[in-house]
Image (cartoon, rainbow, N blue to C red; front, side):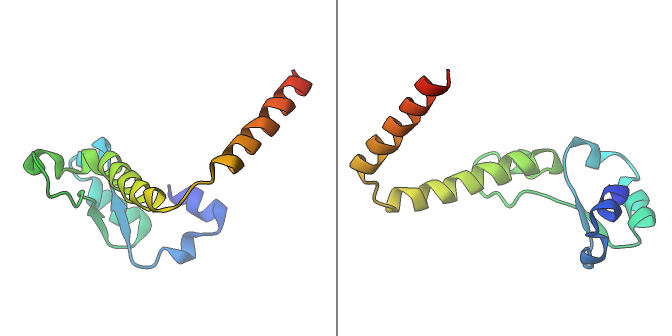
Length: 104
């Protein structure tokens, strides 16, 4: 990860630390190793989840899945509030259909 940060030129922007998530973040000694590599504070990321089975789900292994589910839910609520013009959708689908027929 450090090599990729250097290659991308973003290493200098990581000033406040590193958060490890996923199954491998549970490896014994990984936080200490990451601190030596990055020379920054490192912690385990735990999902901010308050629902059922929270004692099971509040684990770095599930951080990505819970984060994506929460992001999707938040965006679905916003999309439900946006009015969709059926005529515009039909027009767009028609243009896509014509493009596919012409291309294939």
